Length: 161
Image: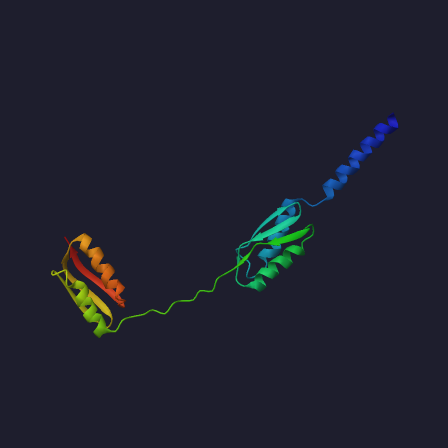
């Protein structure tokens, strides 16, 4: 009976010893975060760890940075596998700005302002200058019409009644 009890206590002690030697998810997460943070293009990465499986999320500069983060995570002791949910940053491509030339713009602005007799418009170097008086509802309509003509700029000096 005493031998059985001693063996049971020893089994419990051994089990606790083995379980406590296993790295904890929080420790693995800290190590993975440190490893990934050391990479130059992985500043926005977030790490989650559950049962030794590291999940990487965030936006990376390019595919190489994403792969480097995954490799760094795999190299951490205690990581069983890595799920890389990172995305690649979309390149910023600026659309060319289209500005209408003065001659056609002057005619189009004259057409847009013809319904507003108290408004005067002048076009110079792609800039439309509006002067005079207008009501608020008409101002919205006029500004939409003038901006649709694609001037370089609209200088609104109108007085709203």
